[in-house]
Image (cartoon, rainbow, N blue to C red; front, side, top):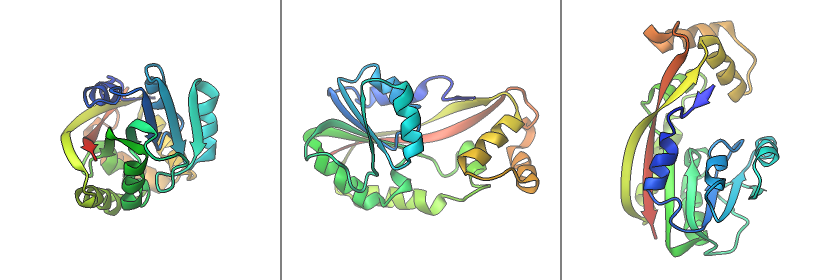
Length: 216
């Protein structure tokens, strides 16, 4: 499995200034997929996630990062601690309004808050909806951004490639991600949703992402 096979996430994050300051905080690091690429260039990198098992995986393979079990709603850091804060596909997984307030608290006045979120209508996101439709949470996160009072510096939308050997590997990934046992009926529905490319080997799916840079 290759997520963001072409490296577009990192290139866009770099263009949006994720490395403009030496101190970076990543919210929603999961198992460290993005964290590892940030760690190679960050001066000081902290990463939080509420999932302790995912944090153990990240800490086990990435050196030089301060990991903490926490959500963006209550960050265990003093005010004005970071130059850049990044929500890695995580703003919609929590109380977005509170998380943005906390982000504003721990970022320096001249710092940046970067928010990377899935687009509601992206190919990968629509397949995730076979398990759980996150549209209300994604829309609530966008509403919280609009009401946050933070200044929008710039925005972009782009698509990355998710590459799997075949449809069965993708199915296994989705069932594991949602902590569910394989369900043949749901798998059939998933394969139907994939459409014409369902039997492609490798199976390449498009993940449509929104990236926003915000200032206090």
